[in-house]
Length: 297
Image 1 (cartoon, helix red, strand yellow):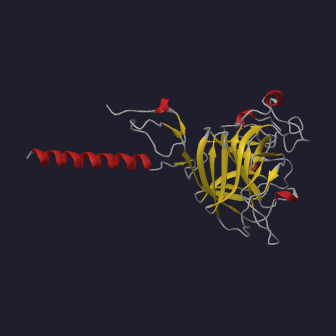
Image 2: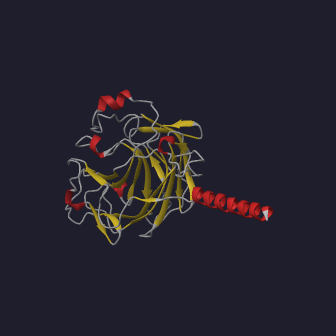
Image 3: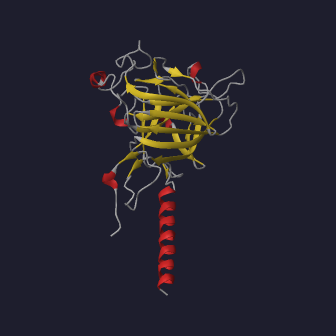
């Protein structure tokens, strides 16, 4: 009889251990877009105050966030970004995007089927009134032009600088190894961002670019273009931060004169409780925040 009780207790222990491991392994992705409206996002368009959604550049339609220019007669300097209102440091982000239609008149030739998302970005509120791009790491999305190759999932570095293969790369934009995506097709893009250490860009499940040691500096859009040239707010403060690691910030969607749709925008936080005894421990966390740990009584 005693052996039977011990066996039952042992099997129960195994079951509880297995369930706890499954819970620890289960990824808890967070949707950044509710599919209905722009709740949780802040808009900043160059030349306009925070949350002035000039000419309804950002709209919600058919469960998508759409960058559209239907109310524009001509694009001039209305570079815009929409920022999720919570910063992250260690995380995965995944989404789908597609370019649609034609570029609004007045848009620069290099902005045809050109957009992206900004990672480790400064906040919307900290931008200068006329600042066109936030200090950030841009995961650049480019659509094919039905003529030659045009990679996507590239990196552009407004006010930042990174290392490629262990060496500082001073180019403002660095191409990925992706294939070209022509037409108005949906493309799945992902990034793994690990603080100020390493960032991976992925397109359709393939890793297409890896860079390390992101820092503030390197000029605004290249070393010969200063923060002042870019009308960056609090220019002196950014200059003082030159060459300091960039390990956290906001996620922003970009509007650069060509219509683009975004959907299924999700984040998996990789920073959290790494104490195995805690009820909210996750095996996939990469950076500890043990102040967040909770324990069952």
